Image (tube, rainbow, N blue to C red; front, side, top):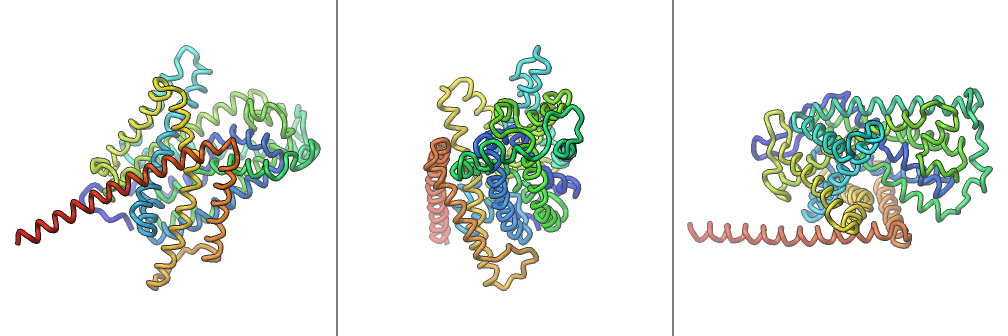
Length: 468
């Protein structure tokens, strides 16, 4: 089933099963795992495993709810469309634009990260030149067809998976003491540096906030599957695999990191968790290896950001909540205007970084800080409403959320609790307030635009009636 269309501007079903399958497996793996996890470890110590387990459990539940809705009604607007149906047009409008904004900001950040790595290898080329070239190349491939996005993401994802499996194998060998030249082995670091939870439960809660955003991107598969030939099957398979993906890629990886190096090692923050462990294991060229993998990870994230932001903008346009031009597609079924508009917005953010006062760009970044939690909260609320509507209508659901409605309510309570913790955490308070301010602005814009649209429709109806 595809979204209801009113003209020929339809999306192509160009993603192959292997594209969606690989996207579902590795879509959650970003630079946050290879580098950013070091910050969470230094915050909570070995107990960071609890933080990752809690954040991972939340993602599993959210994906189950989202999959139930997506299997019943696949749509490129995904949760934005479901929020529209369940909570009202204002909710779909707000969460859609917030999500678009999140991924638009990801584009320049990931491009700059890739440019920084390449500049270190080729210092004669400026970072901004690499940043521009990478963004341009991936924009062009996204413009040509969705198949190109799928193909690029397939190979990016494969490299990430191979890298993680290689790391897990090497780390496992080191833990058992069979790694030659390694200066570390065993599991003692899980408890020998001020215990398993050295900074208390509060630090674990703070780490949950840090780890939560590492999982943003898991939901992309429900957007991408709408451009495959059997979306229901693809979404079901992807959701069923999310538990072992998080357990293998995140929990087992972080377990080996905190087992092999002390949680307060300066290298975890300065160099990243993977590089620190590889160096401790005596792996030659550890920095080069990690930089190469991180380069693939950020290019993958950039590729997905271009794809996801354009599809969300396309969906908003189809629902008349974005400029009508954004719904135009080319011969290959790609929403080319939406791709260009999203890329242009990303470049404007980059220009703001260079020309505007630093406080402006810092606010822009902070405004995306709590969007992941708001997206999850809206998904849960939408699921609660739509499931009851479908049960009342007698619809047969082929894919269901567990223990409805209790587990859905519990998930929403957990998200609200995390948001409250953010409010009282100095490190994350600014992010929450900035996201809140942006959300209120978008809601106000929605109400004004929709009221104006309703008034115009009413005037047209009156004129049509009086002209008879």
